[in-house]
Length: 547
Image (tube, rainbow, N blue to C red; front, top):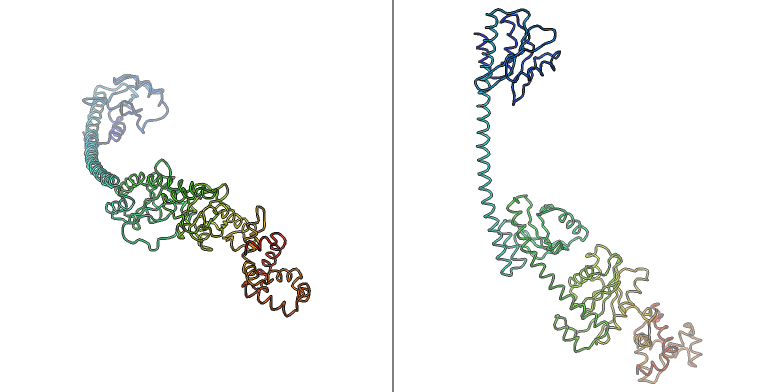
């Protein structure tokens, strides 16, 4: 009775089996050899089982298949397997041996212990099932609640998605551009929204705290940022911004971003940003296509002008593309050591020229980019702008003399190339060189003709030639003899058959008329070369033309 109470007080099946095994010997001449619990259709040995006969006993107990029967235990007499049964199932086995033949009363006590153990296991099993069922029911209720919450969230999410998509679709359908997109995105998220081109220049900003001036982009850092964002799907946090790329068909056309310094962006913010980027993509693609058409028209016109073309046609085409060819123009040649003159570099040159206020037609050649500009470029502005754009200062720019007639543009193109080549082969090979500042270098190198020589001579001796023509003097001849005699006053005066004081007077008049200083090394060199060209190469023919 005490054992029965202990068995039914426990709800642990392993503990019940151990209690029964511990008290088998109290019922008669019995020894317990093993105990088993039925778990998920298998018989699991008790931890109290011995190991001597484990395998053989285990095999025999399984062969009983739920019935009571003899079990041979080596070295033990009268072994038997007793099933521990409940109302619905077998709960396990006890393997018992007896040292002697038990009496009827001892067999009754053993059978009673076995029945009470089976009943206790049945109660414990039922309690465990109820507990498991209760836990399962609780789990199912929690799962149902979670699913209901998810369903509500999905419905709300779908509604929000439809609202965002419809709003941005309306903006796109109405022809709203970048400003309309950033305005809607700011309204949906409450965060400042902005659009940059792929080079980091601001195109639109809606919201507070806009930087003024907007930071100048760093080309190297911009490329690193684009690469980092492109490697990942969806918007990417970059410092205080949530950034996504606008790239229809894989080509990056711009950057759409939200300024989120406090990290407030949630999944709805990300969703709105993604939809905005999708709406902006076709608009930027359309603008890109228009820009490509305009660029092609500009390039074709520039190519024809540099090769020589009909004036009437050129003027008409320039009006169509919005460029005034009636103004004085300069040809500008740009070459950068680390950049191939492809479409991308041509765009870079065009942006830099626009940034410094140049209005130009642009085309490209095998190793350089050409601008036909309607004003003289600043000595350093274009070079500095390109250095910032490219991230390097290893570039050279050549600028022609001014051009007042369209048919003179091919010649001015040659001048710009000459200026670029002179700069590239000079000690300071990077920077900007103007052809009309080359001096002597204008007539050096291949490809020169009499026209270039005449231009050089007229620049340095034109005023003296005109003075000699009007006053029937010999200022140019005097200057030529002075240089031929190495600047020696006595030899020069003797060769001209004049007095030394007369020579000194003439040289002073030459300084006053020409505006050049014979004591200046650069002026002296250019004047000497000009007089030699005038005397030997051009002869009197040049003097007659200038008269």
